[in-house]
Each structure stands twice: as structure tokens, then as C-alpha cells.
Image (cartoon, rainbow, N blue to C red; front, side, top):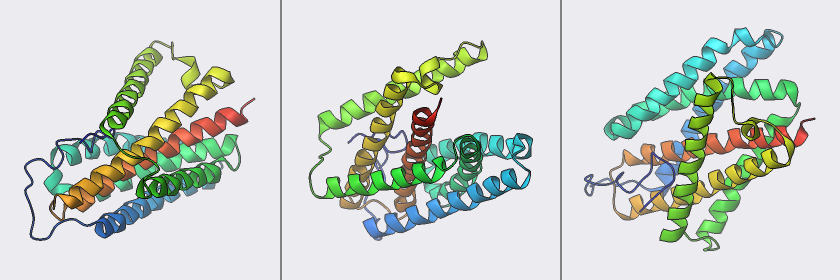
Amino acid sequence: MRSGNPSLNDKTFKGLGVSDEPMTLAGTVNKTAILLALVLITAGYTWGRFFESGGDPSSIMTLMWVGIIGGLVMALVTVFKKQYVAYTAPAYALLEGLAVGGISAFYEVRFEGVVIQAVGLTFGTLFCLLFAYKTGLIKATENFKLGITAATGAIFLLYIVNMVLSLFDMPIGFIHEGGTFGIIFSLVVVTVAALNLVLDFDFIEAGVEQGAPKFMEWYGAFGLVVTLVWLYLEMLRLLSKLRGD
């Protein structure tokens, strides 16, 4: 069992055994909704603070960095200390919301209406892929999982290389810039991010079938939210390129 999402891989349920109160799909869905609501709450706070300041970036930069660094730390804690996921997953969602709200505000200032478009496309993609998965139109075969996992790893490796090069003022242009190649790259990344949702659905379903402990509902929800946040941010990047000069 593989998932391109680093929080949901073939070792996630290993050693957890069978619980008298196992995780359920309904419980995972409910906890996913809770985490998304927490992301929305803090994203709304950062968003509101930015526009109340008249669009002053300095008004939210500290909050954004707290969200980015804190969210990363909390995500790592969640991955390695799954037994605390009922506490770390909500903390991750609140911190990630600070970053998402700030990033969204910056995009909205430059491309009015782009945020609601990205939100609509993200959730539209989620529901379409969930329908395709449940009806068998898309099946998470081993080859499918291997391909998406490899593509996801390659993308994140490229992003890491770009971060290093950016320190020397030599960023990889097509990652952030428009143009035909930049748009094609973003389309590929959006596609890979979206297909990771299929792997997440499959993995959560496997956890339910294996009778994983109840607290793993939080972990499954956490992994799904990680993918949704990534997909949303990539949607923002793609739309900005399509609307750019």
C-alpha cells in the first residue's frame, strides 16, 4: 500500500493492530471537516488582518512565517507520533491556516477573484475524484500508486532545488513565472496533486478495512487535508499564471 502523501504510506498502519473501536469512513469524513474548518478560521484571520491594514504585507508576515514553520513542525510531529494526532492535527490545521490565508491575500490583491476560483476548483476536483474512485472509474492499482508517488517525489525534489537556488538569486523560472512552459508545468503539478487524493481515499479505506484504531481517523483526515492544501496552493499558482501578463 503506497501513497504519494508522505503522511500516508505503507507503514502508517503497521503495528497498530486491530482495535475494539476501529476507525470508520464517516468518522474520518467528520474529522476532515473539522480540520478544514480550523484552516478556514485562521486563514480568515490572516486574510482579514491583511486587508484591514490596507494591504500592508508587514502586517501578516510574522503570522505567515509562524504558520509555515509551525505547520511544518507540527506535521512532522504528527507523522512520527501518530498517537498524539488528535491534538497535533488540529494544531497543524490552525497553523497552516495562517500561512494559507496570507498567501491567498497576496494572490487576491494581484488577481482579483482568483481565490474563490481556486477554492471552487479544489473542492470540485475533490468531489469529482471521489466520485470516480467510488464508482471504479479510477482504480488505485500498484502501478498507479508507484507512478504518482514517483511523480510527487520528483516535484518536491525540484521544489527543494529551487529553494536552494533561490538563496543564490537563481530560482527556476518556470516554477513561478508564466509562459507556455510555466503553465504546462503547473498543469502537471495540479494533476499529480489531484491524483494524490485518489491514493489518500484508497489508503483511508484500507485502514477502515484493517480495523485500525479510532484515533487513526484523525490521521487519515490530516493526510487528506495536507493534500488538499497542496492542491489549493497549486491551483492558485496555475490560475495566476493563466491570468498573468
